[in-house]
Image (cartoon, rainbow, N blue to C red):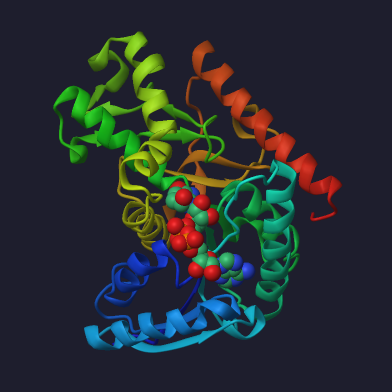
Length: 328
Ligand code: NAX
């Protein structure tokens, strides 16, 4: 078997963690031949609950799980990690303003960015799931000057998967027949799920659907507001699907995307498609050899342009807000 990989997960005692850890431990990211060493970060009051989760991990007797370490010190937990999945974040609670939320998360992601910078392995990849994911990734990245910014990404794969599922339901196709879905922009209500480049069994998806009203009034809002619909129905936010998307994103980043397809990842903009440089924006990307690259040369129609620009405008606002708080 191969040498072990060290994987850090933050917010490990939370809802998403409860699904995510078992998938990573069973080999869903690195495969059946790679031993995994889990390093789990929580806040001090949650360490007791986390010990219970570790007991359950032990009880699964996963052949791929080499060891588990838990703690509340990011510097220690991130020591030598090859993959860091930053899931833990401060949720928005009643009476909290947007600025308060950015500030509370700013404290977490500045500290974790610095700790990764000092302690992580040279090849570390960092995936941010905790919200506001794009801007949390920007904060962590900005506080880790020695880690290339290309090693940070924020999760829009759940939105991507939601879009695949909605398009499959609309057209009667299987999700496996759909290629080249794209989520542009922020993991928020302004995101733009784009089917103009998507293909269903090789045919252009927008042409197959042939219903602009459905795209505008049904598809886009359903995908963008799916998180709220799940909270309404379940009384808790999406967790298993978020964990599954976190796995999909990490696996494809590490092992590569399939030929003839791409995935959505929020990554630092290089100015592609006129998106301002430096914001963490979801693009269509292919991955190969552990590196992502933004798919180039797509024709952008006027409808897409305006949606792409408004979600960029929101991310610029978030960036300016965290800049004025001194977090980046
Ligand atoms: P939970 O509240 O169940 O768990 C979060 C955990 O993070 C808690 O156990 C908490 O103690 C821990 N935590 C808080 N601060 C920490 C710190 N400084 N260091 C380490 N751990 C810390 O939330 P859960 O449902 O698991 O969701 C986690 C995050 O994912 C939230 O921010 C949520 O908004 C976000 N989501 C992101 C999604 C995406 O697609 N990008 C979708 C699902 C989810 O809403």
